[in-house]
Length: 465
Image 1 (tube, rainbow, N blue to C red):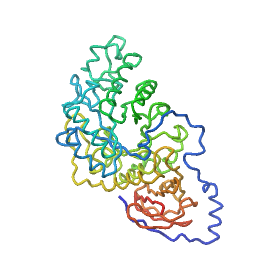
Image 2: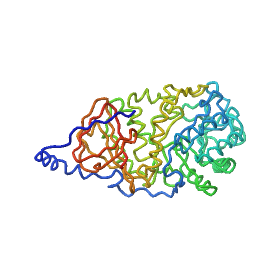
Image 3: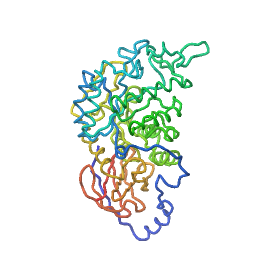
Image 4: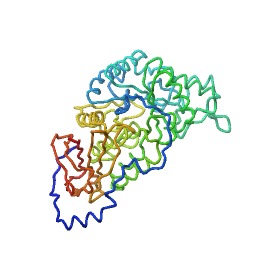
């Protein structure tokens, strides 16, 4: 996690300093990652006020407890509140299809009934109780919505076969190799009306706060635009797209996936990319997305865990380093069920496979990160947060350092993104000042020309005194 930082004298001879200053003059004119951009795409999305400093936590009800029910999960709500969780995203709560089912229990994403609760999880009243309890604790709830396809035994396929995609022979088709589901055809206006009505049902009936929309990019964007417009008439909702196209932020979605940064982090952990690739990512990101678009950053989720490996498999000793990075760069940090327990196994997707919670090994680590984000305006979401300015070092390929400032709040973070010890010199002056190490409470002052010794994968996050 966090190791103690060691300082080396920053004093240099005046002549050397003069030469260094001349050489670095261009690099010292650091530009915030969010500036020097072309005109960003305009967005009509108005984020719910409660999302401005929020984080998000994905709940896998099936695997969360031995019982796999809403009632048993509800017992964890006070613990999650204490950890600092704001938004609870529940994986699909609908009944799972039986026809062409994969495995014993089937995929959560094979929806048999869009307006019903999976009886394996409990009743509609049990679900409402979870929502009510979460609201009482100051948290918000969104549910997974699978608009692109349904189960083969969804009644719609009998009553409205015209709502489904068919091949040249008139046969229903599955998207990709997802043979347990049938593809829906959004060229049909009646399907659109039905789906928006179903979305509204959950907000009106259960008082949830929004939706995480599965494979949102496979559903026409104008459908999501219409859906958001109708949902906001009921209450301000929060919409997360499993996609990362800028167009989704124009009218429909508050947040989208930061898949590209996730893949960059995986590659850095393998030694195939370096810290400069992160800077390049954010430069491109800020040229492409609306200024107030939220991006979601993560080291795991249900897809990554089950199909590509745990964060420990993919990132090894860099796991906590990238979790901390995800929580401090501009964007919303995400945690998947079990990460606070350092879960190091791939959860079965179609079978029962209960999370081993052990002693919640990383709960304190995530608590620190989530509460730092909540309380320090520099880390808030979208345009409410501070711009990220990279702090140049003597080894920019190895070390990613930056400051973020908003009003009187400031964060200075340093990440060694290699498996080697790094002795680096901090250049320019954006970091100069007094800080408190958020993990140790140790107070430190930085002067121009300071040098820092970093252990492999070491990271330090400082908060302005």
